[in-house]
Image 1 (cartoon, rainbow, N blue to C red):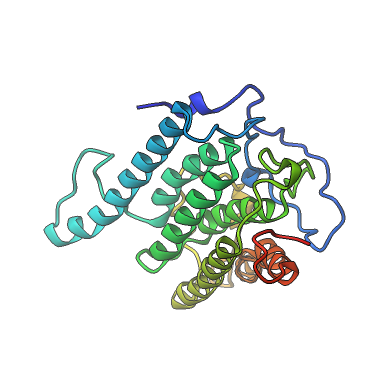
Image 2: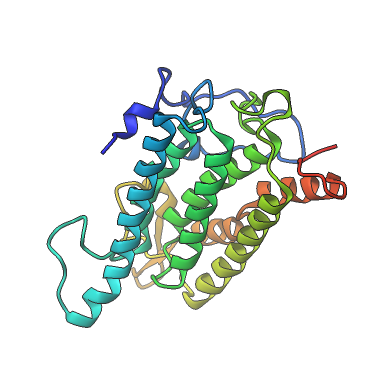
Length: 274
């Protein structure tokens, strides 16, 4: 199987400190942990062996993740779990996101708009479907959705919304999303926003601060605890408000960009702008 590193050109990930995004309606900076990696300088050549290897690699990764998701239900019914990590069912959505996150990185590194759009939409739908199957743990969910939000809004604009740099594959008007892709993206985004509200509403605490997977990189300050008069620990109200704000901000950049893109597309126009 082809390794992820074979699809990455020199340059690695973006540095922690990045230039401010250009002044626009999308003026909420992304947290450092959700910054996308640096893509290839050129898209994969259609029909090439490298493109074929890339597609096979991503499809195999997504298939393995799907099997682990399904095994979650099998383990519950049988009372047993497969000791093999790759075959073991997910215990929570944080574990699933931990597997999906590097797949998003490899997809983004490909620098190929058509493949990026197709696979990222599949991944986004996977997360949306999984939300109702696990207890809601906001930290990994919001962190991952912010990353997808950056990816989708960047693809809609044809530039990295953090750095303002043009994305590979969009030169000369190429790589623009079709109206069908934009409508599908908008549909998944809106479905996800509804799903997050629903699953968060089922859990009055909004979070299980003890259930943090290794991929979650927020500091412990996000889960500061205070004590009441009896010395019992209570969740910091600031964290509670933060989760509520994050719910309202799910895919906010994509919502704005997709609205602009659809509004400016004329009849039969497959582009994302005039």
